[in-house]
Amino acid sequence: MEIAIIVVVVIIALWILIAYNEIVKKFNLVKRGWADVTAQERQKGRIIPELEKVLKDHKQFETDLLPKIVALRSGLSELNDAEVDPSKLKDITAASKELRSGLELTVEAYPELKASESFSNLMTQITNQEENVGAALRIFNQNVEIFNSTIQVFPNNLINSSLNKKKEIEVFTDSEASESFEYKPSF
Amino acid sequence: MEAISTVNTSTDNKILKEFITTTTESLNDVKDIHEVESLLDKVIAHPFKLKFDNLKLWLLSTFFVLLGAAYIYFIATTRNYDMSWIDLGSFLILIVGVVWPLKIVGKRAQSIQNLNNLFIVKTRDLLYRITLSSQHFRETINNKFVDFNRGNYSQNVSWCKELEFNYNDKKMKVDALQHHYVVERIVEEKVRNGRGGYKTVRRKVYDHYYREGIVFPPIAEFKSLVISNDSLHKKYSESFKPTSIVFDEHFYVMAESEFSAAKFLGPSVVLAFEDLNKKFKGLTFEIAPDGSILINQKQTGLLNTNISTSINTPVEFKQDLLKNLTLDNVNIMFAFMNNLIKYLGK
Image 1 (cartoon, one colour):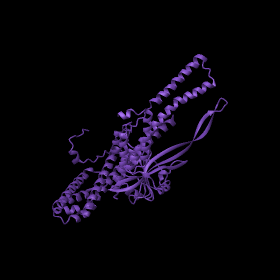
Image 2 (tube, rainbow over the protein chains, first blue to last red):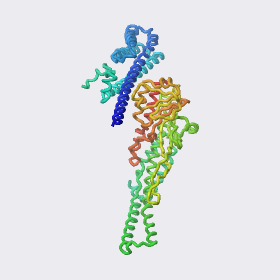
Image 3 (cartoon, rainbow over the protein chains, first blue to last red):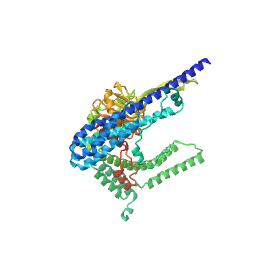
Image 4 (cartoon, each protein chain N blue to C red):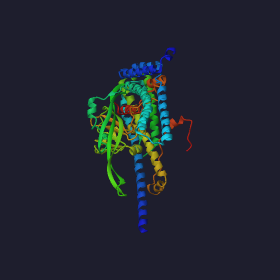
């Protein structure tokens, strides 16, 4: 009888240990996912000086694009790897989109810019970076969903509330994009 | 139509047989898709629409079946199934009389089916520019990839074919292949020992497995990297886990350099792998030390087409072949490689 009790206690202890570690592991992956997003966003900062160099001879750049570049720069400087905060990312995404649409308008005004190889390379780099940021965000959101499910399901919710004490993490949503939909899910 | 109706059936069948033979020969020699098209037009214009008249053969076979039944009835009623050697000989002749016409019917149907398949294969080969792989490729492929290190008994590349891959408005020759490996295992069976009991005997059984994939030439500076659903032979010492939980649940990564693996597996590439994993089972993506790339998986029929019509409806068949023929799984691998080239910036 005593052996049976010991076996049951050992099994429960092991199960708690596994669930505890699972939550820790997934939380760390969410943090890593966030660090990847910020790292990908910061890649944009490397293009800004090159962009400024290519555009400096165009008047429209000074008036229209410079404020957008400044906004993007300041957003990037506020990004924090350690703190998972999707709200700050929204400002950068918006600034990034504005800069991109501004660039497209500038190109229309300066046909010689459109034909320039260095500008075309920069635009390709920006597109690739946007795709990488988008992909990093998708991975981050996937990880967040898996983490949130892990701490919500029974019996992990008991272990989390008493031992890990992790809170649900907010997924990143592009509010500008979702505003264009008429449909709003009621969760 | 009047002239045709006066030709007798045996002549019709002979003409059709000759037509199938000559069309098959012409099809074997076609060099471009227009030649296939003109042969299909001939099939469409053929007065017999590739349909043999098998009525006489069916009647002959049925006659022998009835004769056999009558013979059995005769033996049963007159001799109570007491059969002599002559009866057995007669039965043998009757069986040949039943089977032989059916065999001719089957052979005729098979000749049409073979022509149907040849049309599909030739169209596929011309559209995707499929030819035999080079001798150098065939000689060097067997031990090139870690993914081929499977099976404890034997492994080999059963077939390989060269095809054309388009990317960034450029063309590249790639090779589709089938990898075959055999696993030997010992099974224990209980058999009767002749003394009313059982004994356990051990015997070797051989399980055959097939994997099909595509080998691409180097596309970037990356080398010595394996990303697989399976935990393969550990050729490279470094491993790497990207951030994605989904990716980590499905793939093992093995590389010569962890830095190189990290550089390769950027967010867009990781997601491309997750998408590819939804389409194939037992997936392996491998970059060999010389930079050649293998995408391999365990579903066979990689070069099978999506053609659903047959030559029995030649007009629809022609349209299906020339307008709708695609190699779905090859296209998925090509799309994945196009994405990789875009992300890795060749």
